[in-house]
Image (cartoon, rainbow, N blue to C red; front, side):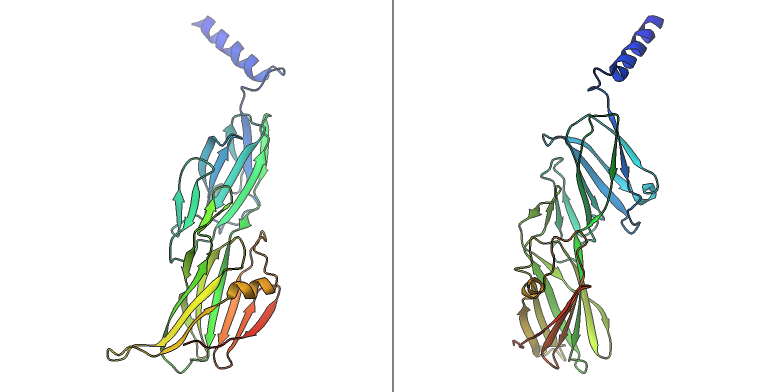
Length: 279
């Protein structure tokens, strides 16, 4: 028995300490999440070898952000790391254990507040370090409707997008999807709706489909006040909205039907357009 223990000890010493041959030894990869805001409740972590083979997968919760999360991985010249944060109730995770894994937005619902991180790491060494800087993959769109303050109306409003989600590596999944805008508040002057969209390949085909009508009274269908498609994508493109920005900007839109005017704002710019009512 003693001889067996000695032999095992010698084997381990030589297999992971001899400088000439260390390919069989693991790399201890530290994932540094100290720059991640705790509003991101958890991260899904995927590690793939250069040939697309899944090496490691886990969920990292925010209680672990203060200290590096260390994982033991095989040595690899190009270990691909993909991370997605806040993939929750509005995200379908089509798990394939490969780079073809999909994260898709559920139809109709506002998107989750998704964040991502991607990197390629050389783990052909004893220790590796990966500092996570989150990439914001969603934009909140707030819409304020003016001009119908004295009318009790209801709204059907959805944002139509070209892409429903992402492959785990970040490429877009080409499938149209709609985001239902939800009522957030009613003021004396405006009605506020809000929703979230995921990052899109570009702004070209984004459109807001809007119908406003008086509420039904005594079983009688309410009169349609507005029925139109607003080319929000064109307005964003004309003003240089950067759909590739690592920190995707939120959007505020004001529709004033007293003056048939639409105003769009982000942190960087503001633009106004005249709109025509379509019934």
